[in-house]
Image 1: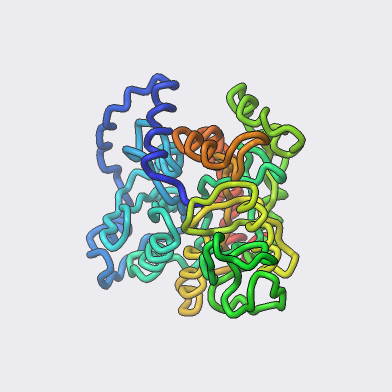
Image 2 (image 1 turned 90 degrees about the vertical axis):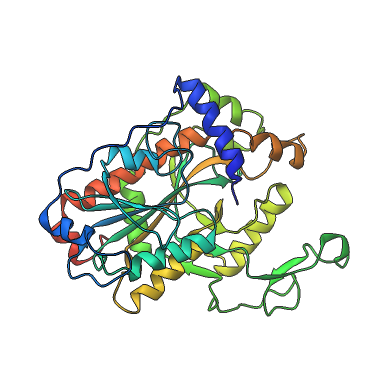
Length: 377
């Protein structure tokens, strides 16, 4: 599900006003003291040869920020930047946003930009940059998402096993499809939406994450109690008959569909389930809708082929900021436009991402000699 940046800015402004934040630009923090090796790496030109390296244990992959990186209403990056003291700015002109680093924890934070094109190019640019040693790094994708109200509720945090791309397809306008077609959107190389013959996902249609790592991350965090509020309860109350939507937020598992179109509605949610089911051969269940994961993972997969990254160290955590369809009795178009002004679960989902993701990060760092050698199981 693509997120409208103007809508995100409006949502962030509203959240800032509610929280009593002035919205003034944060003052730039002084450059912290850094170890000599990090100073040497900072002197290297972006993308150029560099004998010194930034050692990286964890890469926090976020997709957007709203306003400033610190001091105002948050986007996906701000909590990580502030709370993890990612204070060393690393110029990164070959991508969307500069990088930020903590020399003590060796956590690197990035903002790829929205959409699979930007996420893929940013990730590849980082992996090929000679200033960074990513050979043992874990990658935590942490971003907001739409969520199917039949599966989960806003404010929840969802670990993925499968990443499915929603863009590689054939399409016929819905007003021109044959009467017996369920949709005008169907897989490349197939003979229409009724063709269920298995296909190889060899063009980036689907990626399977390391299942043992995903299960470990979920097992470590599944009992974390996520924040609930009157605002969340009010937003989920209209979803009558959908028990998952009306339940409090929780940590759970569910698979991610990445598409460059901000789609919405019951029929599109049905399509998402069919699409994930098709490409995972029935093993995956659609829960979250976002934009970037398949692009990010494709680049990491390429980098792994030349020893610059480890595809088995990638985790995807999505926080549910909004529902993928309206409640009963509301029109999809009206609900989409209204929700786009201020995502009802945005702040809660950002807090959930940080709380749940931090548990995993802290556990990896606490036993780094062990986890540097091999991913947890």
